[in-house]
Amino acid sequence: MIKTRFAPSPTGVLHLGSIRTALFAWLYARHNDGKFVLRIEDTDRERSTPENVDAIIEGISWLGLVADEGPYFQSERYARYREVATRWLAEGKAYRCYCTREELDELRERQLKSGAHVRYDGRCRDRTEPRNGVDPVIRFKNPPSGEVIVNDVVRGRVVFQNAQLDDLIICRSDGSPTYNFTVVIDDYDMQVSHVIRGDDHLNNTPRQMNMLAALGVEAPTYAHLPMILGPDGSKLSKRHG
Ligand code: GLU
Image 1 (cartoon, protein in one colour):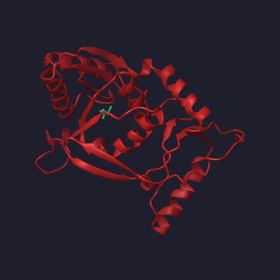
Image 2: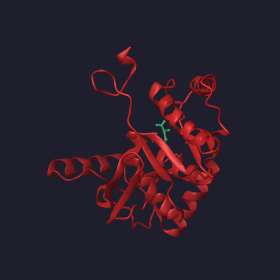
Image 3: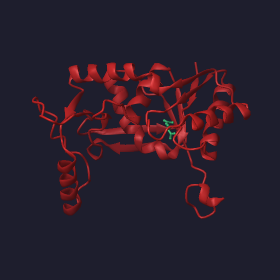
Image 4: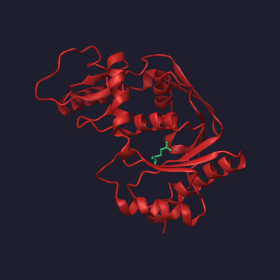
C-alpha cells in the first residue's frame, strides 16, 4: 500500500512551498490508490499556535487535498516517543549526555579554530555516572563510520559519511522529543511508504535512516522536491511579496 504524508510544523502560516509539497504527496497517493496522511508536527510548543494549525487544516481542505488519515498531532504522541527513547537507552542505542552549554560552546570554538568539522564529540557516550544539577539530554548513538546511501527518487544516489554526522539529540533536557526522532517513529508507526518533502530535509535523511536501522525497520522511499525560489534565487518568502 502506497502511503504518503504531509507533515507541516505549525510554527508559521502555511507556506506556499509546503502546499506544493503536499500536492505532490497527495497526487502520488491518489494516482496509486494509496493513502494520504496529515500529521501536524507541533513539538515546538513555543512556536506552534492553534491559529497556524487551523490555517493548515482549512488550507488543505480548501484546496481539496483531502487526507485519508489524521490529522495526527505529535504533541499527543509523547508517550510513544518516550517509550522508544527509554528502550534505546536500555539497549545502548542512545545515551544521556550531561554536557553543559559552556562545555559545548568550548568544544565548538576549538573545532572552529582548528578547522575541524563542528560536531558533538560523543564524550558522554561511555559515561555511567549522572552529574549533579544537570538535566541530561538524550542522544542517539550514530554509527561512527561508514556511509549512508540515500537513493532518492528525485535526486538520485546521494552518499553521506557517518563521520560527518554526530550523535543527535533525540530528547531535550525537559524531556521533549526533537524533530528527527519524532519523524522517524511516526513514519514507521504510520507505515509511510514514500516520504515526499522539500529539499531542505535531504540532510536530515541519513540521520533518519540510521535511526530507522536502529529500530530494525526498512527506510521508506524518499523523494526530495526542489524548493520554490523567488526571482532572486533565494527561498520564496514573505519578502518576495
Ligand atoms: N515538519 C517538517 C517541516 O515542516 C517536515 C518534516 C518532513 O516532511 O519530514 O518542515
